[in-house]
Length: 157
Image 1 (spheres, rainbow, N blue to C red):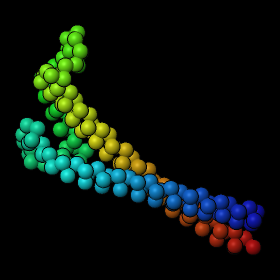
Image 2 (cartoon, rainbow, N blue to C red; image 1 turned 60 degrees about the vertical axis):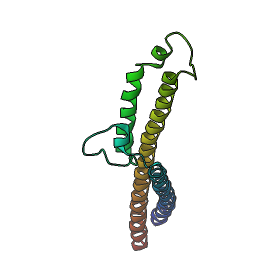
Image 3 (tube, helix red, strand yellow; image 1 turned 90 degrees about the vertical axis):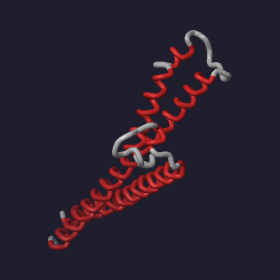
Image 4 (cartoon, rainbow, N blue to C red; image 1 turned 30 degrees about the horizontal axis):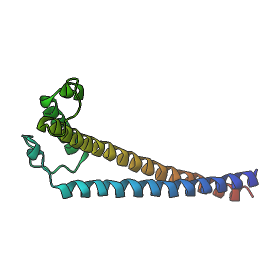
């Protein structure tokens, strides 16, 4: 019994160490990619007011999940004022790069996609950080249980 408890504690220490390493890796990736996103978006220095947004957030630079979502939704509204869908824009024809309306619509679609990819990216970094934090907590729990079992196995001698 004593040897079984000791071996179980060692297994828990190993799993705890693995969970800790993975948790730290997830936290590092989540935090570093989040910082990269913020940095890249701040470099563009586009404010919500530049897109016609008014209100209390109008002077905020688009550099967070919330501001990117607001900006993406705003660009989408503007794009839909040109044409409700891409199919409606073409009206049975094909894209005409010499037509300013077609070009403006395409540029708006690209900007909208960029902003929504930013929203998605912020979500992924938040998931990575949450997963990493959970793994670190589990590593600490496994280590604590392993320590308790090791202590119990020594007392059983």
